[in-house]
Length: 207
Image (cartoon, rainbow, N blue to C red; front, top):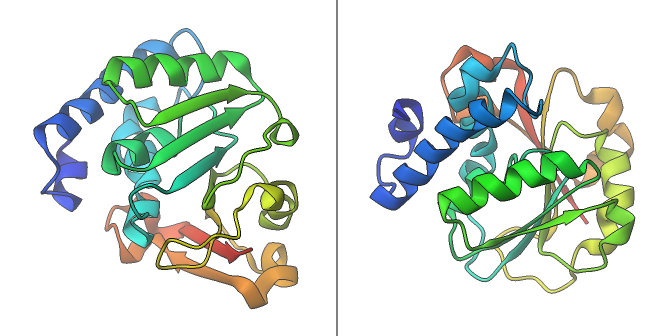
């Protein structure tokens, strides 16, 4: 059922397999009631949404005990798939749209994820500190950085300096020019061979 995820991550456990299969079952069911994924794209859930989220896991495997903030998580992406892959890392999901957060909570509960927490609200209402902030197609990187920088801890415990990791598409030159000196861009086609990833990128900015 999750053949593409297993192709790239063949060593995932039976528990992780079942958690992803729960997501594959529940996201379409919830999406029929609350639009958390484009309805024209829900048939591409595994590749375009779950596997896309896991590009962050390809880029960095957070140290056990790390705390990660998923900014603008919507229905739980990329936070929930990452939480499956890294059960010893805590993911805090925040979004301003309450009904989307409720979907994420229900999917996490059904999947048996215990390393996630949820906050309905604005990033300005989040006062905790995290090792990294992750985000998926929320807003331009400089704006994300400005809003979330206060939430990034100065205590380092990972192989890369703490910062902001975003999943984006398209041409990013103009968007990143003011922060280019502290930003790295990775083409997702280096990780995944599906055509969807040909124009997709991961953007990492040190804070």
